[in-house]
Length: 80
Image 1 (cartoon, one colour):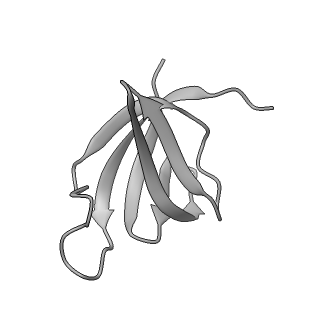
Image 2 (cartoon, rainbow, N blue to C red):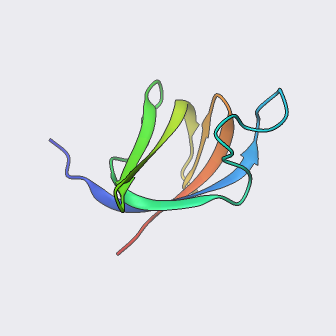
């Protein structure tokens, strides 16, 4: 099994159609924690500082470290 790595995600764009995101995760929000690289068709999660960050279903990933979900676009970077 693949090992969990430390990542930082930053929300770049909100694609949420009905205004404000229900969990108040707006553009510019960032989170650091342990997890696996995003996989299309699955929710993306990170665990850090006693909290869990979780997205809606990942719909696309690209080579520049960006990924899209049903509601948002994020940039992901590995933290060394």
